[in-house]
Image (cartoon, rainbow, N blue to C red; front, side, top):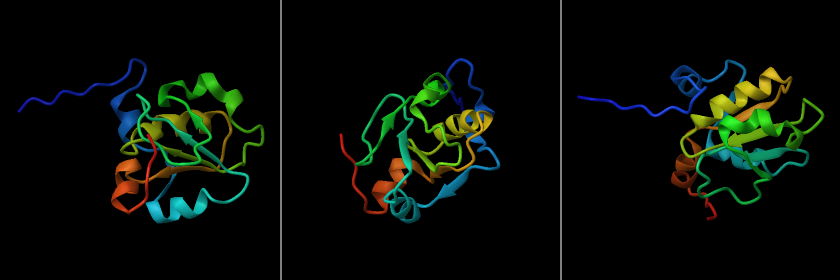
Length: 124
């Protein structure tokens, strides 16, 4: 058996697969409830851009978050909800945000695949 892993330059497999310890992973139902609150930021970090959750504030590739910090709130305690197709790309984005002082970063567990399986819709 041959396994081929494609990883973006500058991004290790460990960074992609192992979530930062302070990243909060929410199942789709909890994530859906959380993103309806005021003063939260919803960011799709999937590359390439695919179907997304209605109300998404930004579409920033997971490996470019550090280049787009101006798109994130100045208040580092603002809840930031990240998602991608499967949940793994969020690990890299979250690490970058934690390194820049953000403290409330959440991941949609299982990504938009789990979101759709749970009965929620996405937009193209």
